[in-house]
Image (tube, rainbow, N blue to C red; front, side):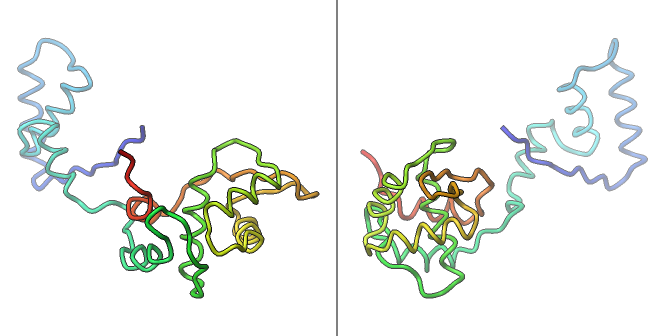
Length: 173
């Protein structure tokens, strides 16, 4: 699990150093990792490291989500998460493809027939060739030179994908 980077802002460096020195002097030996985190955050004015993390978790995520785009793209899917129509707007097309990309198994090779069947199941407008070509052209899927095998390319999806999937993937009982 990746860790979120949290910045510690110190208003008065002199007071911080004095407080930290007092905490270290009161100990019998070197503090452990968690103890040191607690000392640093207490010297900066927090109760402990957990308090510091709780205060800073309210910050917005590093990558903002375009909720208007998510809303517009979600209108192209039905209640079962099937893509009903290909968006005319170029800005909406990649997010639709990301939704299809997310349904492919990582590391699995798909035959041309399997790929066609999946795309037809995930898109109700019957143009699997358009989707397959777009996924390859935009770098979401790779295919062998003879076109017989397809594989999802592993990469970090945009922040909007998670929000879109919450809207279009039907809840399982």
